[in-house]
Amino acid sequence: MKDEEIIALHREGEREKAFNEIVRNYSERLYWHVRGFVCSHEDTDDILQDIFIKIWNALPRFRGEARLFTWLYRIATNEVLNFLRKRRLKSVLSFTSEEKVLIGQMEADPYFNGDEAQKKLMLAIGKLPEKQRLVFVMRYFEEMEYLEISEILKTSVGSLKASYHHAYVKIKNEIGKDF
Amino acid sequence: MKKSPFIVPEGYFEDFAERMRPQEAAARRSVPVARRVIGFSAAAVAAAALIAGVLLYPAGQTQDGADAEELYISFLYSDLVSEADPESIFIPEDELQEYDGLESGVTEDDIVEYLISSGASAEEALQLFDADTTEQYEQ
Image 1: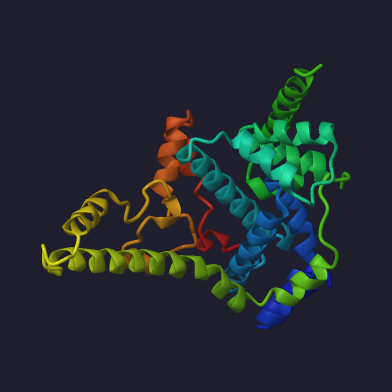
Image 2: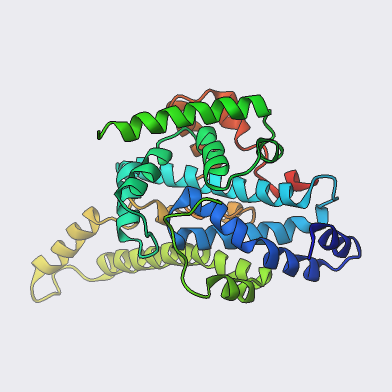
């Protein structure tokens, strides 16, 4: 079902039907969006459920002025940010480096199928400041257009391009350390 | 989308759609809060029982008086709620009603303070929470 049809269902008051269609259409896309930041499948599953709970709760207030795609990704991105902040705070409180946590997770995760180079890439991405990480993952892995990212993050295209460039240079330097 | 180094359990997305009944999912996600409060309550009850046992148990009536003293000393030095475990942080009852899903018990103020201490400006730190509540999703 297209987004316009889902919005039409929503406007007719068919909240549950509209929600079910959103889950059907977007669960996989939002899953990969979250996974790009969070790495662990278990954490991604938890966050994805939280995202759809938020979507369900917020759906009555969705007026259709923003695109459905933008609105859903904005909710998902905020949930990811919340998770990352909590994880960072937990690692500070437990005197563990976030990098160690991430390495441990990737090595223990049966659903991580990457080689050493990909592991290094994910670690390098994990070290980026929040905004740069967001832009990089959305642009590099999800191959989103800058205009789409701009609508989701409410940031200008120019600023996004700058963030992406900085992220790219940092990752290149980080990975290049080992060579 | 670029090839990802991550894989997904087989049938996950089909199963997810089946599992995703929001009211049930919300109920499942709220269990850790109740569990934590129950855990603290259990610890509080155990502590109360220990105190009662120490205070009410007649001194000198044990076969070995050192047992009561040992118990009392171990109580003095025991951790009723481990401060190192953020999951056990007590959530005051009046805050439980407004619990917004931050399951670790960490508040937004804690996060903001941390962000500022790690170099972010106060504006940046606070800005990150701008679109955090569902009220912001009126679009």
